[in-house]
Image (cartoon, rainbow, N blue to C red; front, side, top):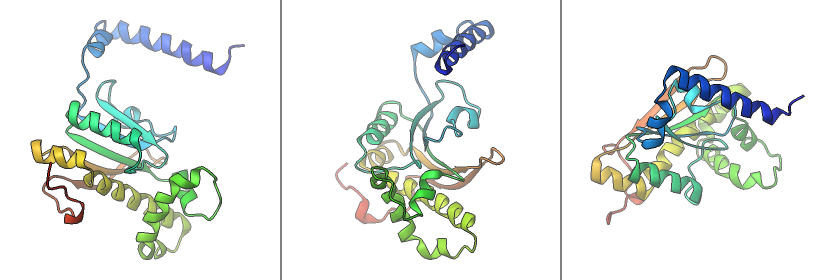
Length: 211
């Protein structure tokens, strides 16, 4: 009996063969250039693959994923991906996509000690603190969780706007647009929450004047 990981390798061979059968030049085109219009910042949850939920093909979305789709200004991994996507790939859109039922956001709403993970989800706790009245106004626990998931996405959109990377691109080429989305595991649909462009208001405290 094959180990579970061996099944993945066999699936890969089958997928590659079927892809070439349908489109003989597919991998030649894919290997020659990468020009995605989109950067996707999503949750690491295995149930929310960017390409599957958007119906896109390899090469169309540049992807970064972490627990609860966070944009943290000390996360060099995120910043490296962001700079490459914005400055070198010249993406036109950045999508922050959360999802209902997010375990990371749910953990942040609790007082449980998650050891190392505490350091990550504390950033989500900060979002809760800033919007406590709006969230606690919801009478049901699931509604409170959904509201924090949505507000967390919108805060990450704002965090992107606060970066010098995005502000420099806004100044030079009036792009990218930043979108806040949330995905439903129950019906597979994406809900649009917000869009931010170079024309939208940003508190001057976060603006850089020497870009």
